[in-house]
Every structure is written in structure tokens, then in C-alpha cells.
Length: 143
Image: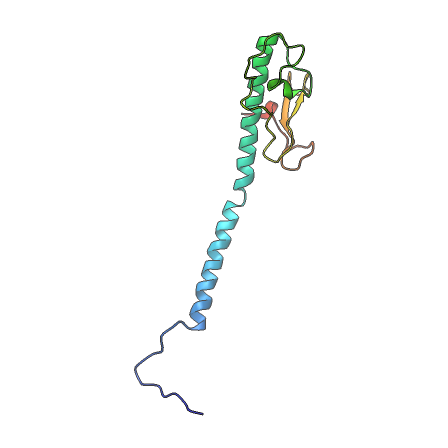
């Protein structure tokens, strides 16, 4: 077996294992900090979107009431996109853009009660857990 002879004063090119471990550790720490700081952002964005859609639905229901002297029946948000039989006045395009009532950011339908339990009418999303609980986002709790 032939042994390689090192020339004094010339160092082999490349990184040592220790240098690589230090760099990988630093990258891991930075990624950990970034993930922790950004983990709540998607839920906050969904909550803000749900609040905005609840406001839009409430405004559309108020417009419906102005034209028809009453709100649609409880649970009938479809009245905002399709003319109900008892509607006296109804715009050709409906009260919402598009042909469907939007789903909340978690894919569930918005709930609508007339009369409401917390206000004249209640419009709300069940929130991230998809069931009635304290995290519901409704028109009674908007800023």
C-alpha cells in the first residue's frame, strides 16, 4: 500500500466535520426561531377573513331587509344569491357577487339565525374547531 506524502505548509482544501456541524446547528436554530414566530400567522389570517366575510354577509342581509322590510328566514343565506318566492324586491345580480354563498375559511358554511340569540340576527362561523364553542366568529363580536 502506497502512502500519500503531505507537503509541509499546504493544507488540504475543504471543511472539517466540526465546521459543518457548527453551520448545520446555526441553520437549525434560525429555522426553529422562524417557525415559532410564523406558526400563528395562518390562523390569524383565517380569523381576519372570517370576520370580513361575516361583515359582508351582515351588510348584504341589511340590504335585503331594506328592499323587503324583513330579513330572510333563519338559515336561508341562499336568499342573498337566489330570489326567494316571498321577496318583494330583488336585484338581478343578487346581494352577493357570485352565484353561491361563500364558505368560511375552514370550509364550513356560515350560520344564520333570525331572530338571533345575541343580536337581532346572528351570522357566524364555527371557527377553527368546526363546532359551536367560544371561538365562534360572529357579528356580535366584531370590532
